[in-house]
Structure formats: C-alpha cells, structure tokens
Image 1 (cartoon, helix red, strand yellow):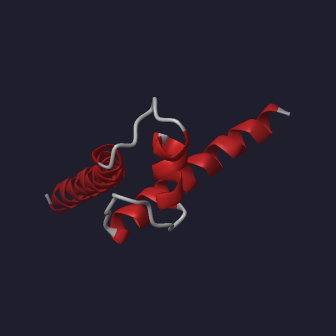
Image 2: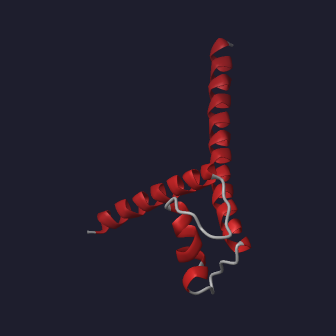
Image 3: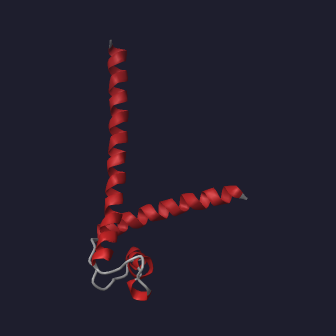
Amino acid sequence: MRKSSMMIALIAAFLAQVSFADMAKGDVVKQCENIANACKSGGYTDEGMGDKSFWFGCMKPLLLGKMVADVTVDAKDVKACRKTKIEKMKKEIKELEKVK
C-alpha cells in the first residue's frame, strides 16, 4: 500500500512539473507576441522598407535593447523573448555542427 502511494505521488509530481514547464513556455511565446504586436501597432510590417521593416526596424533593435520610435514594450518581455531566441539559435548551431 505504501509503495503504491509513493508511486502515485511521484507520478503526480512528474505530471505537475511537465504542466508547469508548458505554462512557462507559453508565457515566453506570449512575451514575444507582445513585442511583435507592439511593432505592428507602431506601423512596422513585413512589407515595410528601411526604418519600417518589421524585423530590421523594430524586432531586432528591441531584442538588442535599443529604443524604437512609436513602440513601447516591457523590459521583462524583451529579456524573456531574447533568452528564448538565443537558446533556439544555440540548438540550431549544434545541429549544423553535427552535419560536418
């Protein structure tokens, strides 16, 4: 009886950990979306050229910690989104290194 109770507790703890990990991942995606929405609200688009380019004129500068005209974002969102982007790039680099 005691072993089965312990197993149930361990399984429950494992499942809770997985669900919290998913919530944290969703929060980071939301933070990157908040930045993207702020850029769009500031008039930056994929079709934009030069200063109004979505990536080069807004997202990239914000992720590098620079200010962008007509765009206001929370520093926490920028930090979390930047961290996620860096981790993703590191994984991609490791995959590319394996190809050699």
